[in-house]
Length: 390
Image: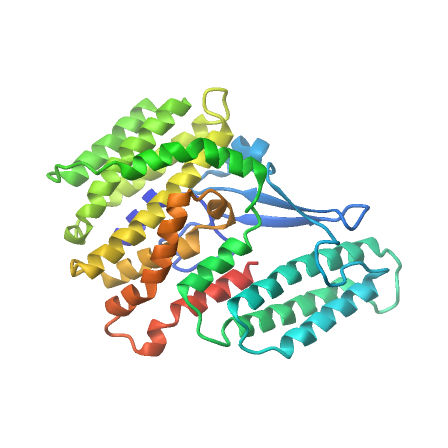
């Protein structure tokens, strides 16, 4: 129950396509990456659909005007390796050469591995471009099937290399940041710059001081919001700011509330998030503002969750539900996706880096019943999931 509650009130947003870790506590948000080949194969568009859950199907249209606001451009001339081909045969041959190159490597440093990941994204985009452009029919020749097999083999090799030496949570964070498709996007940078002062302000505010009837007060606050609704940007910001005070008060007392029922708050938080998305798409509350501020809210909550868990473990207060604490420490590395990474404030980036440094020691301390191999299994799992959905 504790895990489910913390997921719902902090997330409602994103994650990688087909990523299912614990299907009873995780709702999937899809990032569908579509590659559109243009007449000029050196001009490939990466189109992303960013949907946040929980949303009913009919609500998706509310955000359609901004779903494609962020376009990552890949050019055939951006890599030092050959990405310009005469036909699909040459493109596939370059893929084979890259596969062979990977097969000959072992235990690369994280920077080298990230470079290989970047190159495969560029090479695969370019190869698909030429395969689609090549309309000459040949007997028993199926270039897209051949590419699919090569793609599987290359991903297998990338996974092997990722796991060929011990990696850290810091490595995972560096990987995610440097490979993010949204980092450097001017429209997101501008949106983050506008919202960052607001989140810097609420980051400094304290939680509610009175912890008597904490859950009842939290639930009443959410019910009041449900009745009033959220129709303007100012109302959205007021909600996020006040909810933050309740949320921080809850986290401060989290170690005492392991057996408390949180189902009503879970449901009410979900309903409020739905109201926000339903009410957006107007001049008073644009879809863009709803998505940006709620995504940044998710970042703030996930990192605050992890920070609090680490502090509780260090302070000896994590007496109950160690699995919940392990999950919350790992959440930022799983649930903050490319879009969320691009919206991290400078303060949140610093927090994320500190969480990455503290994550493994915290998990080691919580996992007293696990052997060394089991304790070190979390980072490899994160890497496997990332490569599978890259």
